[in-house]
Amino acid sequence: MKFGNLDYQKIKSDYLKYLHSQEVMSEPFRDKLKQLKKFYLPISNIINEEHIKDKKVKIIGITGGQGSGKSTISNILKIILKKIFNLNTVIFSIDDFYKTLKDRKKMSLKISPLFLTRGVPGTHDTKLLLNTIKKLKKSKFDKVNIPIFDKSTDNRLPKKYWQSIKEKPDIIIFEGWCIGAKAQNNRDLLIPINKLEKEKDKNSTWRLYVNNKLKKEYSKIFKLIDKLIFLKVPSFKKVYEWRLLQEKKLRTKSRGNKIMNDNEVKNFIMFYERLTRHMLNTMTKKSDVIVKIDSKHKLKSINFN
Image 1 (cartoon, rainbow, N blue to C red):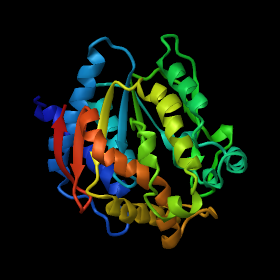
Image 2 (image 1 turned 90 degrees about the horizontal axis):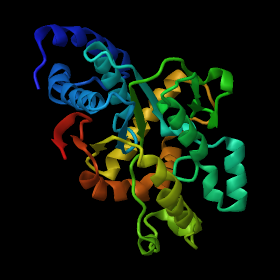
Image 3 (image 1 turned 135 degrees about the horizontal axis):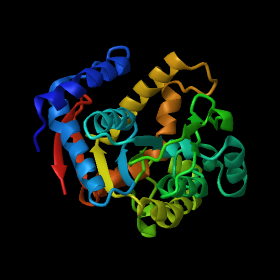
Image 4 (image 1 turned 120 degrees about the horizontal axis):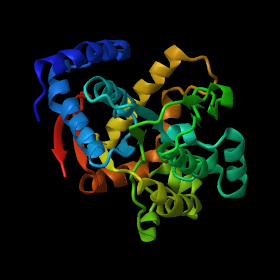
């Protein structure tokens, strides 16, 4: 794959401008132009090649542990796909389809208190998510409204603030920490993986429910993905460190009362630990593109299946 100098210059300015807007506190992006050439342009080219096969709407899944850079990478790809390939791209996160706080409270009373905390499969409105994807892919396109979840208040924003898509997309970038994950064998759920499971899910009710949802409703949605990109973090320990950074960024942007302190973040990621570790062990073989991220948060290597 080769890009002419005109194409490269076309994207370089917007790319650097976007990265500058994302640099917060002491976390500058490293090797910016090298990363553009080695990672973002080749991935964008693969997405374009997938689209030109039949000119139909393509769903690109981007998955990886918390803090792996899914949102940033999604927006960089959107810039490149528009500037170089003239592809209209819509981005949304599975996070935006979290059930409302009211609905999760009901789940916590009916199934397990652990469902009050958002994150795992079972805490998303999968019916709304599936319907939204189907509407975006319709040949006769009509306006589509995509929900927005406010993590600082732990609740979905009112409909008047939702993302309004008025033009039919060529590419849908669907990102999220558990995108493409496969269910585990039930026998693998029996031994608690951390303090949360040991003390708060003694009968495995929560774990089994999450796994069953992943096996059925989520699997149906993930099958719609045309290309899956896996951002492989070095370890689960790094997920904790990077999630702390995310929360610090959130503190600078919002006044919501649900922003977590460091200890709350540590407890929060226990909800994600089982599936994150499972994905680190299994997603390399199941993904179309694997991007390894080093301990300094830099894209380290790329492989294509």
